[in-house]
Length: 558
Ligand code: CDP
Image 1 (tube, rainbow, N blue to C red):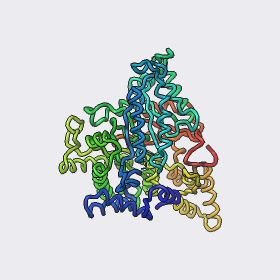
Image 2 (cartoon, rainbow, N blue to C red; image 1 turned 90 degrees about the vertical axis):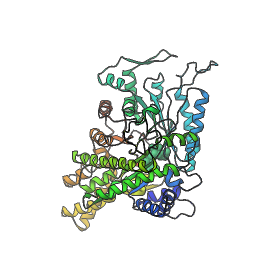
Image 3 (cartoon, helix red, strand yellow; image 1 turned 120 degrees about the horizontal axis):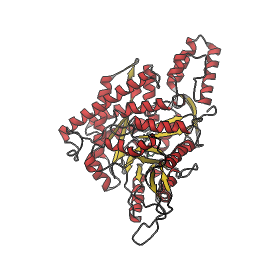
Image 4 (cartoon, protein in one colour; image 1 turned 180 degrees about the horizontal axis):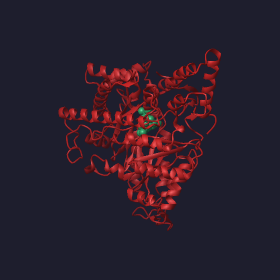
């Protein structure tokens, strides 16, 4: 199930001394989390079969002296120099253990204004970003992988334009994703075509930041190189399950976990493709796996160490877990449903609704035995549950490679491509389902022997060049529709899939809306508005080819 790339990552970063292969990792992790042999055995089988995998820190650290299992953290940043550098220190400690950190910088005084009682002048939030970025560069998540941060600023902060342009050149702040939080009132004005309304006046320069100028900058930034993302703060807080503990103002680095200050979350994802047998979904087995995965993640909270005492306190109050899915696109192909079809979205919605409902039911059962999460009283949950939120959709960038499936709920980027790893090695990747079905397709069109092989080679080369096979007219329409890839799919269909999942996901969704290179500013504007109207909690757009460094390298076309 693992290709060369996955094998390389596994050997270079995940295996501990004395471990030979992935099975050894599963044995260590399951043995550490399970309370007895039977439970560890069940966890082991679920992981080893590729049905479910926890996030990378759990695979790397479970049962080791570090033993920090969570991938996602949020750290509050104050508005004093002491508070800001306290957050720097806390972020460093967390990243040392392999966790990614999200920060909202909106409380920092605008650049050039008097910030402290002593009369010192604030460098502003944007200047501090590079301090946090340098820490990640130095720490490199305990030397095991690139550090990841989310930097957030409220659209009404006077330094918003500098923030939006903070990554205008490739390579700047390379450990950060940047997101702007936007409340409904601003989105409503933007939707109504309002341009002149003032969002903030810069106290040092007197510059007026209007809705028009700020959204122009956001759209230009996205067009330029895919940043910033947007976070819809009211949508996030409408679904805050513990409003009595405060407002949510930040997410982890890839956006899937809106969290309270100091909260952390251990993620784990179910590989949907593993549950398709002879073109149907095995609901019974899926149910068993969801229940087992909830127990795994809930136990992991108590089996994990925490980088800071504040993390342990916050996590153990709400006991949030991050159960998600991966392998969606593979599952849809096995079911014969094109990713961008209404029937695929209906199916996706049915699967995620089932997973969320089953997870909540299991959490209720756990609450009966072990008690509800301590902050349950005053939360929006009427009946006791063990976990304040249960479901999320993570990118599964690495664990999907180990499971040998398509990442998260993303469409396959290209069914054949060269992939660079961080060590600079190139790997040839051909999607296994595609390769098998292509053979059948070519045979069914009557091409055999040398002719068949030549046609197969030509298709693969073309897909490698363009990331698409839609223009290869001699392949059947059905085959081409089934093998649509990320750039064949319109932004509307990307968003509709995200919305189908969001309706049944407690936390949020990590998803990139991939756009063809030729996409213009107007389409980006429309996509932002549509995402908000679909009640999404955020949106990340990326115009292909707008950054040179990309994990994928296609050689031509778009
Ligand atoms: O597949 P894997 O478990 O490695 O991670 P993912 O699903 O791609 O990312 C999940 C979360 O892990 C991200 O949102 C970050 O919070 C964190 N992460 C990180 O801290 N550093 C990375 N290099 C990648 C992910």
